[in-house]
Length: 265
Image 1 (cartoon, rainbow, N blue to C red):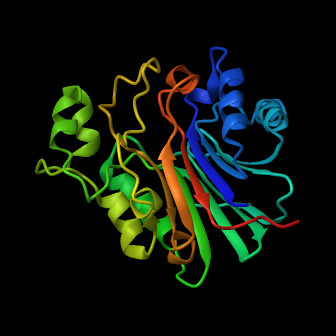
Image 2 (cartoon, rainbow, N blue to C red):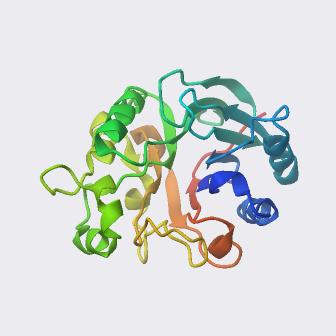
């Protein structure tokens, strides 16, 4: 047995009849812990939409709302995992961040789900630095979500060139340098990119999907599963899920990692 974790930006709450496809994708991957982003309207009417999605996928949902008009995020935990604690991270994120700790056979695992600022690298770095403070080399901590940031280990020249001109400023600093500061700040704090640690090969982009209308993207990896070293040592695999419903259910592909852990009740 292992622990399956997944992150997925479902684009504007799954509007337009996409929630059924999103639920199918989640059920196919069977994550023990799932981080969701862009949960537009899921906090309304007593949280009806996130409750329906949680029920459809057999999970408990812990929703975190934005204080600044952005979209909520959530961490969902499936049975038989025992949730030790859950809380909203009370920082002025444009979107939001939430933290859930579950019991495993190797001790508590803290999972942070978040969605960083899309439009400004400086603001994104600001938010990343708040999250970097959650890195603790003595603890198992996962950070999952849409970080809206390119990584500092890759040559992104062609990806930037392929972007529509009016979207390039999201990923460039004032001098024209590619802005990778958010992921770099998290890495410097001790968060390890599980995709790289697992040695995954092949296409790595998480946006855009084939039919998701992601016109602001150009085959970029913006969605990450990061972990402190005690987690990174346990990664078996990490992959971008493609094909089937994922090509149209969102403009982002989900990312899934398998860890050499088991949840306990």
